[in-house]
Image 1 (cartoon, rainbow, N blue to C red):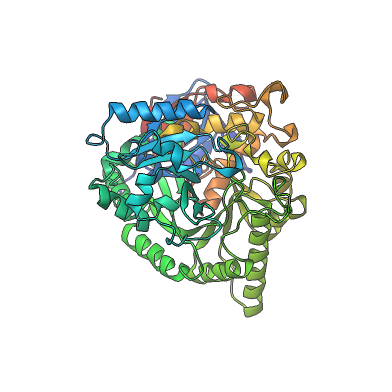
Image 2: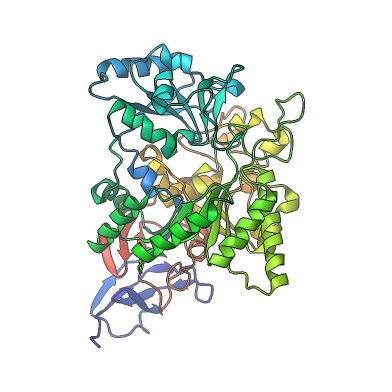
Length: 563
């Protein structure tokens, strides 16, 4: 067997994220594998030696919930001015349409309008109809879960008062008292194939979203520029995405370990989607690409009032509105049993405290049933977001082996105060609180969940760390006159840098079931390493985003910067 030349990085401050040796001053690797971690004096004979002159080295970063497909497909979207002035938004749309006639752009896609712009009544098509009526217009809300469209788009999609909602009460076309769609659409309903296909067929045009290696290159270049060497996909956008990624990987341009998820919407649909997941894995799975997780959206968002709540909405005088949930506890319990039988993990979007409780109950029941039958429990439940958790339920993830996945850059004022429309002040101030869950021993993984080029810069792990460590969003700060220092309460919910680094490395690797090869700097693991400009434990938390990625090594190859 041909021996591989050993490369040594020495005179460094290496945070290994390995509890047995948290700090080291030298690391050596041969090919794609780390062969030594320790002191420079104890290192094996090496070919290339780089003196890092005291710089900091971290394991390759893992963003365990991000959307490569959605980001890549969003490059053609039109950015709205950020304002709560409806007239300003409508004037912008009108002027843009006048400058770009239907023949040039037959379908207008704008992002973002503030989620709370229209209050609880939501947007209406009449406003868009007044400024653009000659072609479909689609406006995306800031929370990415509801849309505002005009009459021309409803017509092009073939949506009428007789059109059934895919998931009534959750994924739906909001209707007036006569049953007519108002132009307010919830939970990505307009993105479903049964509506997009007739839309584009009607206007004789296709958006530039066909997944190709070229379309995806910018996204993966961003990852390499920011030390991200492994990702968990929040949602596979079709087989073309996987084929494009496989091509990039074959050409040495992917430079990440990738774990994909296949979405399903119901218990009835799950068996078919499990087969699709296994088909994808058989066709595209290799040492870098893997597809072994199912994905479910259990509820909506707190800002739109369609998350599943344990308490009635404060703006409902009848006290009967508890939000929406897409699946009963019984069905979710059955879903866990099916995933466990198939050897797959289950990743669930859940935002409200009722969704969290239903999820925990379903996991607990499924585990008990497996014990009763003498069946091994292998399914890893991954609960993404978990923005509000009842204190009674906080110890349960540790006991049940549930992984909590948090999008760190949401920790401040990114979504403003819209949830106050539905939550009591006390409940709103309990949002984004994870320290009790972490302290109980639960696995806590960090991610960005960015879905568009508009926000891709926020996937920089140091930006996410800064927001989570301070509870202050430098781009969307809360009103300082009401929130001292623009800190989102409670200040006690700030996450430590140690917790965040572990969440972006070892715990992310555990979520992706790659802890045997990724997540720490230790012999036998992959040589995925980052050299950064400053020691993140010496930088004030409010300045973490200033740290630069000076060099990134993937599988033993320098892919960015210099040593």
